[in-house]
Image (tube, rainbow, N blue to C red; front, side, top):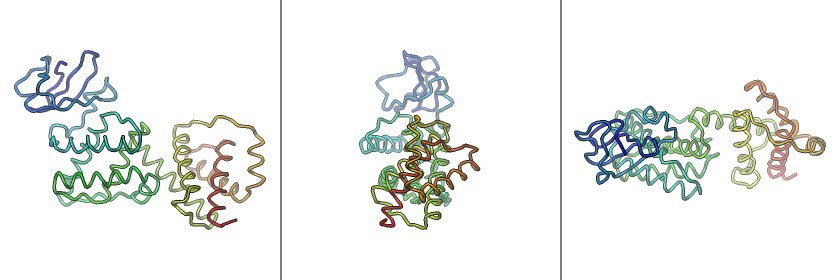
Amino acid sequence: MRIVKVLNNNVVIVQDDAQQEKVVMGKGLGFQVKVGAEVDAARIEKVFALEQAEHATAAVPESVDSIPPELYQVCAQLVAQAGQRLHLSFHNSLTLALADHIYYALQRLIRGEHVVNALLQEIRQFYPEEYALGEDALVLIRDQTGLNLPEDEAGFIALHLVNAALDENMPKTLEVTRLIADIITIVNTQLGIKPQEHSLDYTRFVTHLKFFAHRLLRQEELTPSADFLFDEVKKHYPVAYSCVQRIGLYVKKKFGHDLGRDEITFLTVHIERVRHATQGH
């Protein structure tokens, strides 16, 4: 691996034999070395591949040369735990992204600044596994640094995990989370119910809404099904169907998109199940 850029005495960007750029860390790796030189393999402690090789140098967080190596270790441990518990294989650039976020969160904490996570309740509700990992991350960070980050940061860390799992960016994930929250508010208001958040029907409904929201924002459509399903659902579940019509108006106003018959069908079925479970009809 040859050095492309020296960030500091301990961090360099290299290009491997496959022309992929990577961030490499190790004590003294960048000390008095020149661009184009072969990296000292014996000093390498950590290697982070970047997802978009053609933009790799630009994708390196600005804070990379300021982040303590111990914080990278914490983030690498968190990513490993998340992969095991969520049964996912995360790209190791997630470690860089988390380290960058947590580094600045710690700097804000030291300065006495607090960033409120306006979607904390929704994140806790819609992404419970990721949020639990975010809480564990706060414990790891406290044990390593002695600093107690606020609960809001558990939510932000959870969103980073959601981003990585769905291959999205933070603004898109935030938009998805807000969309799910708005639809649930419409359902609760329209039907006059308070769903049992830990029930199987409600969990399935929220899971469906996650995929629905991503399809909507990506302008993807469900595979068409038989029209008779739509007709049967409309006939037998009029209350839930009316609620979906209200959701359709909201989606049309906010995104300029009409709900397809299949989206209406599946939303109606899920809402009917939640309504039935809540009201005992």
